[in-house]
Every structure is written in structure tokens, then in C-alpha cells.
Length: 380
Ligand SMILES: [Zn+2]
Image 1 (cartoon, rainbow, N blue to C red):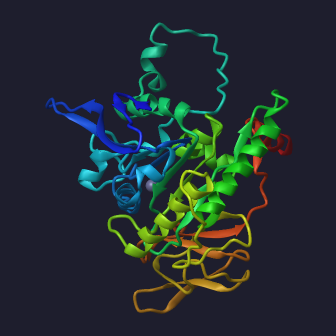
Image 2: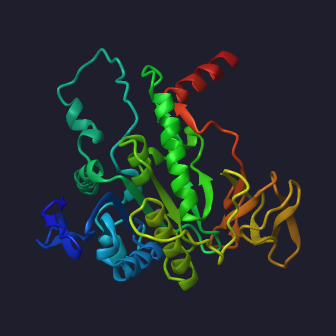
Image 3: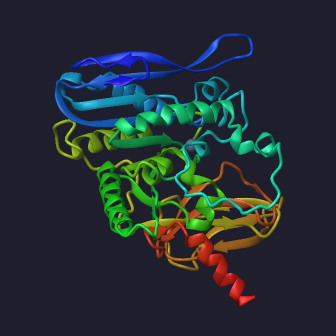
């Protein structure tokens, strides 16, 4: 296999770097890449980490996978990129040092575009349109995404929050209503991806509902783009805190990666259960936010992953003397997924993510947003 100018070799690990961009002072930013081609034919699996430069668990997990995998025992090819954002890694920030946009919202856009019908055409329309001038990072990721054509499966490793339960994000699959077969294909793709997430072994969490998903540009995340544009199974894994590494999280993430490699037939062996963290597999979960109503200090009353009934106190907000100003209760049956790394709060501030049972369709038409808007217009 050839990835840009790097060639894999049967039964070997090949290490290299791909040019990303040139810095103003003339040196180049380069993306580290490892190709591991087995002796036998099989699928191609892309594993990436550290697209947010301060998220380190994926980086370390992939380093250890690279070291431990025996290429002679692999069927197919592994493409492993320990850091999709080397410039963010060096300065330990979410974004790289040369642009301020979230690198996980710049991947090829799967959403069909409808052009607005404007009567006035200006000579400088293109000059003024930022979409016609993507930044250097988007340009590189667009170029890099060409390898998605060669890839069968994709996992991107991230970090969430210091007190969060490790989990996997599964994207809903969107389809074109005018294309008759696409709904059925989308359901098949969703089911296939869900099985891969289940093989990995962490708690499954669905990406947000359409309005939030598109507003946050999550369809242009690494795996959002892979699933919804390239129509292949991929998902994102969230591994605890950023900024440092916990060995039990890395160990569990490695079990997950080995599990999917076994599940896809790329290596031999039985799947192993993850036991270091709760795996909440009774439901498909979705996230909602917990917000405070007062200024003060928020203190969790339950641990991430601890299931509670609706109405059970999950946080209290205290004043500077420790007097309780507010008790926040569980909005539904579910659990806290992650708690932000702070205790200070103000009214309307997000302090945590809470998991509830998913009731939203798993495959949806692209036009969903438009229909919702029309419904709202009718109400007015
Ligand atoms: Zn991330």
C-alpha cells in the first residue's frame, strides 16, 4: 500500500512522515505515520489520535499498539497516526499553534449544500467568501482524507474530561431522501458501525441530535466525515482526561483496539471484556447537559458511570462558606458521563454531561433540519 510517498512492506512496520505545511521561518510540519502490512490479505484499518494536541491517551495507546503488534500475524494493513496535530502536541493545546479553529471540525463536509438564490452577483463574491479560502490545516486534512478511499475501518482516539467514564461516540447516519435505497443502506452502515463499537467494548454514546450536530459541525469531525461522506464504519473514542496519562485508561483502550482488530479478522483471538471501568451496555445513550442556576462552587454527589433514577441529587452548588445554594437532580434515569475540570460556576454554566436513553432516530434524512424549521414556522 502507498500512503502519499510512504510504501508499506509485507510483514514489516514502516515508519515515516508526511509533509503538512511550511512554517514562516522555512521549516516543515510533518505528520508521523506508521504502516503495518500483514503477510496475508485483509482490510485496511486507520487508527489516529491526538487531533486535539493536549489529548494524550490516544497517542500513548497507539504508541503501545505499534510496539506490540506483530506484523507477521496481521491480515491486511494498519495505518497508525499517533498524532494528527503535532503542532498542538508541542504546545499542549487543543488547536495547533498556527490556526485557532478546532481541527476536528475541518474534515470533508458530507452535507449536501443548497446554494442560496441571490440576485446580485459581485465581482468579489469569491474573494470575500471564507469557504473558498480554507486555512492551512483544513487544506492538509482535505488532502489527507483522500486516504479514506483506501480505508475500510477508522477509529479516532480523543480525551473528554478528568472525571469522565471512557466511552465511544457513534454518529447517526444521514441519507438523501430522493435516493430510494439510501435509507436502507444507512441503517446497514449504522448497524455495522454499532457492532464495531460494541466489539471495542466501552459504553456506547450517540452523537447529538441533528440541530446540535450540524450547529457544532460534528458532521465534519474525523469520523463524522468518514461515516457520513465516505459511508464506512468509523467511530470516536473518548479516554478520560487531557494533559496527562493514566495507565489503566491506556490499558483499557488497548483492549478495545485489539478487540476491533480481532472482530474485523485482522488478528486472531477472542474478544476481551473491559473491566477497569463501568461499561453501561443496557441502552444506547445520548448526552444532555447539566447547567447551574447560581454562582458558586459545584460539587458532584455521584461518580461518572453511577446510574441513578430521575430526581436523585447529582450535584450541589455551595457558596463560599459551604452553604448549599442549589441542589441539581438527575433530569432522567441515567448517569453523569463526565464532569468539567473545575468547581467554580455561574448561572447557565455547563458543568457536566449526563446520559439519558436515546429516543431519536438512528438514521435521518439530510433535510431533517429544514422540516423542523417548517414545523416551527407553522406554530408561529
Ligand atoms: Zn478531542
